[in-house]
Image 1 (cartoon, rainbow, N blue to C red):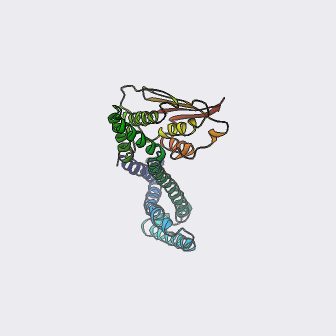
Image 2 (cartoon, rainbow, N blue to C red):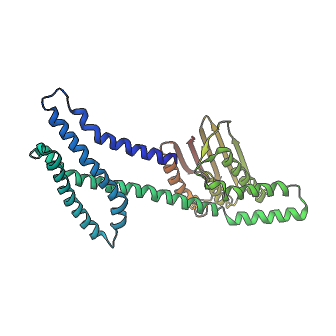
Amino acid sequence: MKAGLVIISLHVLVWSAVLLLPYFFVVPESHYSNIGFLHCNFFTLTNIVHIGLFYGNAFFLYPKFFNRRHWWLYLVFLAVIILAFYFLKLLMLKTWFPILADDKDAFAFTFFPTVFFLVISTIFRLVVDKINLEKEQLAMELKFLRSQVNPHFLFNVLNNLVSMARHKSDRLEPSLIKLSGLMRYMLYDSDEKKIPVDVELNYLKNYIDLQELRFEDGAVIQTSINHDDGCYFIAPMLLIPFVENAFKHGITVNEKPVITINLATDDGLLKFKVQNKVEPGNYAKDNSSGIGLTNVKTRLNLLYPKAHELNIMNRDGVFEIDLLIKLK
């Protein structure tokens, strides 16, 4: 809702500037001020018509007719519109501004701006379509990510819980609570555009704790998570692909695997580092880490433009990601 109001306000501001700009160049004391104001009035009136043309093309003509089936019809409509607007503005000029009818500057407004506004309108539509496509893609990726927290991980956790139940382990109840929290986050909290950092970190902790339950004797998992008291928000499920990737590829090494996860927030800056040992050539694979590292980069670029820094490195058998995000 807030974003919509900002966009509407921006449109109003831009069009107001376009319509009023000529009046700032007319000097009232000038001998030609009357003619100048007539030019401005004609400019404003014709551009009010152009505004209707701009939005009509952007939200009706272009999306409805510019496709493989009707593209030729779209071009016909454009030709008819250009011709119709030419005669409409010519009629306005001769009816309401006859003194300008023989003025070359005024006459130029009867044709050229129509084409100009159509071009700008089409570019605007293309940008809107691109933004909407990226938003839809992000929404689809997030839904896919939510369903892709490795099913094998969940099955193994459930098997471990069954084993605990049989042995009447004291760890059964806290493990069930963590699994419940993880599932609740994926089903409900991740639908939000932004969530408190505390919620995201709690999800990460539950995920890591349950992974430790799976590999308690087969891996060394070193975790450090420090969060300051600031009230900050972050896009949901933004960090989990890096952790998933570490467990996916870090556990496959022959020697005893080591996974290191460090996260800290300080004055609105989130610092996140994940390291895991990899077999030679294995670090390039990334088929089961939810939306994948490549798409995580896309999400970061879209959600945190110029507000993040991501470095992905592999050296000496260690795969490492180092991420900085300026939180809001």
